[in-house]
Amino acid sequence: MLRFNRICVVGLGYIGLPTSAVFADNGVDVLGVDINPVAVDSINRGEPHIVEPDLDVLLRKVVQAGKLRAAREPGPADAFILAVPTPFCEGHQPDLTYIEAAARDIAPHLAHGNLVILESTSPIGTSERLSVWLAAHRPDLTFPHQAGELSDIRIAHCPERVLPGRILAEVVENARIIGGLTRKCAQSASTLYRIFVKGEIHLTHARTAEMAKLTENAYRDVNIAFANELSIICDKLRINVWELIRLSNQHPRVSILQPGPGVGGHCIAVDPWFIVAADSTNTRLIRTAREVNDSKPHFIVEKVKAHAAKLKEPVIACLGLTYKANVDDLRESPALDIVADLARAKIGEILVVEPHINALPASLGGLGLTLADFDRATERAGILVLLVDHASFLTIDHDVVKDKIVVDTRGAW
Ligand code: SAJ
Image (cartoon, rainbow, N blue to C red):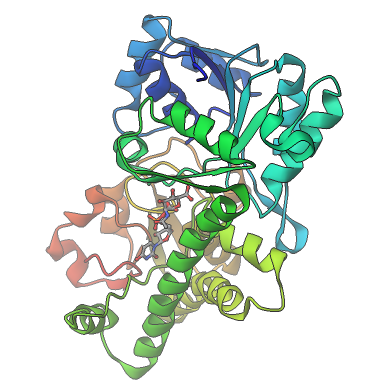
């Protein structure tokens, strides 16, 4: 039976950092690796470079205890976990360059008996490719695609399913799918995750695990697309979509999700494309759902423009930039596109409110925008566009709203 005293986690982002901290808190010596020197220094001071509830307290504890150390280069370990980004490039094709680079960086440190885990959300077949990439760097070792159960190195895909905002609870409690390139690979990975996972662990093949992760997010994307499509139809038919959904969900077998300004985040807006890339002929529904969700920001922009055209010198407060409520994450956020398009349309003065960030992102540079205070912006503006339902926005004084034009994309007010 393998023992995991020391692990090396490559990629200290929203998944890698909490996972490292939880392993360290359970007695494992963790070497965390990131190419970003600012993140490495911050983590070594015990300060997370990302915002996630309770992560600061846990990180300080494990860094002070000497159980977690961050560095720019990997080192020897019993197990390696790759938690690097898998974005897409032109034409929505998956970009695996971060995984390939991580494989190159850990390869010199691999030793007989090591386990390599791919946690990054990955297109089908990536774990097999990882095996081939590692083998190319280490001809002195055997890998699962060459030696099957007898391989020196074991490889498994263990996708994470944690919800940003609840990561530390979900990483421990959620059921986990572990896909090995061989049975032994899966069993070995299961032993590793059992160190802290309390949820059920289901073993399967790596390809099934890869597809399961993509399926979960595509399922959610398709269901959000249904809600977004309904919201556009209802707008035309002058029906309150929020009431409609609430009433329809009274049916025992109906559970419609919530419409919004579009779908953001690094997962749901990205992962379905990996399925489309794998089989472009048979993914009509999944592709259409992506297109419906991606077109929602344009619908909101047109709505705001129509309202602005009715005012003399419109002042428009755009409330929220993050991809969802109560996080600081701007990745793939539809609110960013909406604000940029409104600014470019030059329909009036735009006030941007986002309490979770200190400076506007580069993508909004050069548009003459600055961050504004919530109270001042909502007081000054004639049009309020609620883009994110942050808790701090929900307590707005109804007297402030009552004489304004409100575009509530979240149905929160
Ligand atoms: N959204 C809606 N309507 C809804 C629900 C969500 O418009 O009814 C929007 C949100 O505003 C946001 C986007 O969808 O823009 C995604 O938000 P989310 O909270 O649904 O999910 P994420 O992206 O934060 O995390 C997802 C989760 N996957 C599923 O719920 C199937 C999480 O469990 C995954 O671990 C994560 O993706 C991931 O890393 O893949």
